[in-house]
Every structure is written in C-alpha cells, then in structure tokens.
Length: 324
Image (cartoon, rainbow, N blue to C red):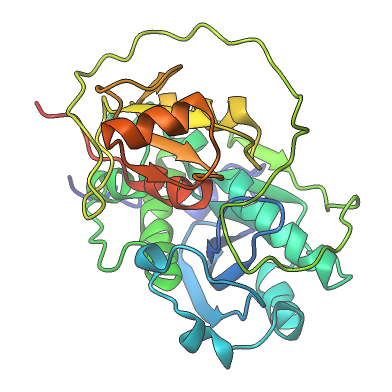
C-alpha cells in the first residue's frame, strides 16, 4: 500500500486537532502493578505528524528484567542503566504539552504513570491517543490490531520487534498517514484523559516474575459467555514460535491484571478462552505453576505448555494470523 498524499494542508487542517504528539513505546518486566520499565523511546511529532526528533534510554528496573527472550534486555545490560528517577526530567521534556500516542496506549500510560509516581513526580501528559482505537475509527482493513499489521498496511518496515526505539519509529511512521486520513475524513480523534496515579504505595521489588497475587484466595467471579472463536485450533503453543489465532488458552489462579480484561485481550487477539484444561488446550497461563489446582495438574499430565502472566502479556502483542 502506498503512503497517503499530503492533500490535507495546514490551511485545511482541523483546528481542533492537537498541536503536537509524543509517540511512545516502553518495554517492561511484565504487565502487573509492580512491574517496571526497562527501556523507553519517544518520537516527537508536530501537529501534522512530521518527526521533529527522537530519544531512547535504557532503564534499570531494580528487579528481574522479566521475559528477556522477548525484549532482549538482560540484567547485565540493564545494570549500569539509569534509574527512572534519573531520566524522569528528560522524559518529561519529551512529553510536555503533547498528546501521548501509543499502540495500546492504556498500557504504556499506566506503566509510565506508575514510574512517575514512584519517583514522586507527575508526568506532564493530559491526553493520550491509542493507535488501535484510531485504526478502528478509520475502519482500516487490518487482519488484526498488532503493530506489525498496522505497519504493513502503510508500508512501514519493522526491523526489531519489541525494541522500544524501533517500535516507536514504526508507530510514528504509521501514525502520520493515519492522522492525515482522519483529517481528510473529518474524523474526531479518539483522545482520552490521562490521570496521574495517586493511589500508589511503594512496595519492595520482587526478584521473581510470575508470583503475583492481586486477589484474595477466596475471590470468585461468575463466568462470562463469550462468542465462539472463529478460527480452528492450530494445536499447542511452541516456545520458539508466536501464539496463533485459534489457540485454546486457559487461565489458573490469581492474575495481576484484571482477569476479565486479560480474557478480553485474549479474545480480541483471535484466541479461544478455555474454561478447563484438556488434551486440546494450547497453553495454560498461571502465576503459580507449582500449585495443585486441577488445571495445573491436568496441564502437567497432558504436557500442556505453561507460561506466567508476564510472558503471556508479551506474547499477546504478536499473535500470528490463523492459517488461511
């Protein structure tokens, strides 16, 4: 697909649109409340989406780096990196007065807001824009809402997936034609308010990912009826390959991210949420693989692959399309 022309000029640009954007990507140790940022990148764009400059930094998370096989940042690499509090001022200068743009912006914003709260500061961001929401507003013909699909749609070449700098570059290059398409059609941008986190209470770092509990042992919630997965089950997850649409994913035990939100993300990615474990289950997600729950016992008996919540969150970013 060719890039959009610049038919929308400054003279016809919607006056209600923001005057500048900060396209952001952060890599993290996981998805939970206590997880940390390990790298961050910002591309500053002007009102019409043209790149002004970019910035990248590693961040010492002061804990286990999480799924290294996803982001590639080991403890040795991060040991000499600055703490977030040490880069907060420079980060603020990149964000100040701009709309934060990210792919799945709620996640990036929450991770950033928590880091600022730990540093006893407030991020100078008032609004965010999610490029997934914008793609839906534009009804782009994407097979899914992965960053790689958005990039391919606009002819942007992705070089290093899960590298914060390259992901931010890719998103910036894909955002510009999306922004112009919205301006040409008179689409109202899906801007949301960014509220700083005020309820944060610092807690000690945990050296192990995966053993994270946010709900009491006796917590219970009714199951939700979900539409049938439209894709056939391609089989079990393999550790050296991405998840594939149609895979059956089961969850066991407490999750740091709200379970229903995690299941919603699973369904949106084209995966099937399994309520039990059988020989057909592709993957079990649990933060306590040594527990004696029926699901973990069955998963071990059947040889079903098991991953923790943090690793699963990263896998959800790049789910392969179902076989045609």
